[in-house]
Length: 315
Image (cartoon, rainbow, N blue to C red):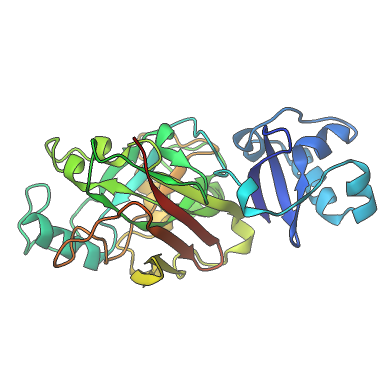
């Protein structure tokens, strides 16, 4: 199942499910069902909904085209309509840093050591680096990435598989982690490298500028992804491949990430976890490369989908 948040004809955000190449508008469909379990809802509220609601979602997918049209709930699937699946997360996006061995190595070389570790440090430390991105950094799968030279001229790219949590949990064992996953989406952890290195190795500010977290194009539910730890992912800038790897290269896999993130900290429906990026980021290249106004950044994760964002200069 592919779930989207999209702009309705009046510009309001609606939640939908994709069938073939059309969107069934659940914001309109669900309130017309009997009994009414959910109305005027967000994606996060749908994720947290009771099983009866999900039975109605399945019924929408199985309904005749005439029935969906009769409910005025059939919408063309057009990229320009799509917003981030969760346009405004309720909490910061949780992020794994240096979760691919080759990216950890290139980062250490570029920084001359990371967080006090020398470049020759082991590729898998005892504990992962964890940081967050502000909810206001989130933009849609085809929105422009703002470029403000007064803030930074060192915008970098990072394609990532993102996990969307479906159930509330704390201290989740690795063996039970998949029970808490709702689905997956594609995320670009756009990073202002100069700002990132400016604040005592605290990444938050350099990772949280407005418009630096494109997400989408949809959430693919967990049942559609048999093994999230074996998906190819890639990133292209202006058609040139910059990153390519598989999630099998992650130092900590999805189950371990959920165990680590939930240790002493409650995860809730709609929480987003970015699982890390492979090697090939711009700041670690020789010479370094950074995004420029007009650049087109395309991120793709196997089975999940593809997002495409243009870098746009702002005054």
